[in-house]
Amino acid sequence: MMLLPDLSAVIEIVINAAKQELMPRFTHSTREYKDDGSIVTEADRAVQQTIEGALEAQCPEILFVGEEMSEAEQSALLNTKEQAVWCLDPVDGTSNFAAGIPFCAVSLSLLKEGEVLLGVVYDPMRDECFSAIKGGGSWLNGEPLGQRIPEPPLAKGIGLIDLKRLPRALAMRIIDEKPFSSQRNIGAVALEWCWVAAGRCHVYLHGRQRIWDYGAASLVLHEAGGHSMTLDGEPVLSVSLESRSAVAALNKALFDEWIAWLGIESDGK
Image (cartoon, rainbow, N blue to C red; front, side):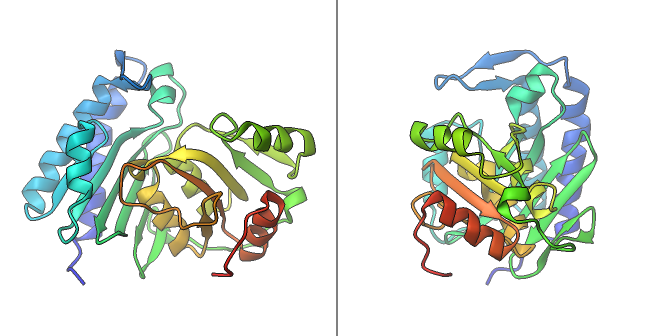
C-alpha cells in the first residue's frame, strides 16, 4: 500500500485553485464546444493547469490525468497499472458554470491499481469540501459523513435522477410510475454523489459518467457507508475511459429497494 499524500495539503491545493481561477470567472468565462458537444471554458483550463502544477511540485512521483487532455493521453495514463495517478475534473458541471447556475465542483481523485485511494470534491459556491480516504472515512468540511437519521422508504424519498442519459424505456417508466416522492437533477455528477452521501437526496441514478466525474465522489459515498452499482449489476468504478451508469443510495435497505424496483440482479455484496 502506498503512502498517501497529506489529505489536508491536497484539499488546500483544490480549494486555492477554485478560489483563484474558478470563482473570478463565474459568469465571465467564455465557452467553447468540444467534438462531443460538451462545453469547455477558460476556467476549466486554468483550474487544471494550476492544480496540475501544484500537485507536480508536491508529489512529483504521481502521474496526472485531467479531463481537458486528449483522449490518447488520458487512455495512456489511466492504463498505467502500477503507478498512482491523479484524476481531475477541473469543473464538474461546466454547463451550469457557463450558464451562471451555481452548481459545480472541482473533483480530484487518486487512483492506483484499479482503486480510488483518496478523493476531494470542492463546491466553491457553498464553500463545501467533501473528502475521503479509502478505509479511513469521509468528511464534509472536516465533519464525518454517515447516516445520522433514518432514511425514508423509496416512495417517500427524493430521487436524484438524470433522465436524459437513461435508456428511453427506463426513463419513461420512471416518469409514468413515479417511484419516489420528488425528483431532482443538479447537473454536476460529483456533487450528486456527495449529496447522497450527505443524506440530502436518497436514491441516485445516472446513465453515463466518466472516471473524473465520479471517482472522488464515489469514494466519499462508500466511505460514508453508501452503496452503488451499474444498471448491469456491476461495480461502478472502472479506471478507464469507459462511460458508466450509476445507481446509488446511502442506506442499504433503501438501496436494495431501489435496485429491486429497477430490476437489477444483485449478488448481495
